[in-house]
Length: 106
Image 1 (cartoon, one colour):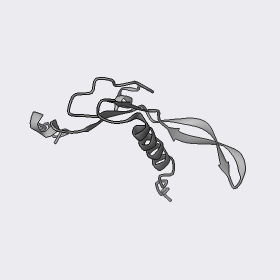
Image 2 (spheres, one colour; image 1 turned 120 degrees about the vertical axis):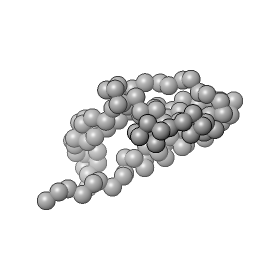
Image 3 (cartoon, one colour; image 1 turned 30 degrees about the vertical axis):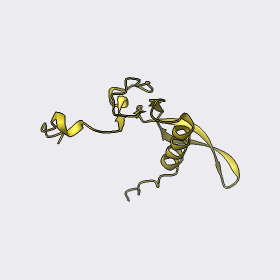
C-alpha cells in the first residue's frame, strides 16, 4: 500500500511498535526518540554495510567480512520495563545474527 501510494492515515494508526529505517538515507545510526502514543517502542535500523568482524569458527577466532547494521531501541518507560526490552533486543540481535544465509547462485 505504501509503495503504491494508497496508504491512508487510518492504515498507520493504533500500532504499539514502530520500525524506523533510517539506513535508507545512508545513516549508520540514529536514536528515534519521539514515541507517539499508544506506541511503546521504536526500533531504529541503520544502513547495512560490509564490515570486518571477529567470530569463532570451529573453535578458533576468524576474521570475516559480514553485512552488519546498528540497531537502536527507544522505549516509553511508562509503558514497558527496560529489562524486558533489553531481553527482547538481545534475542532480536541473536536471531538476526544467526539468520540463515541466502543461497548462492551457481
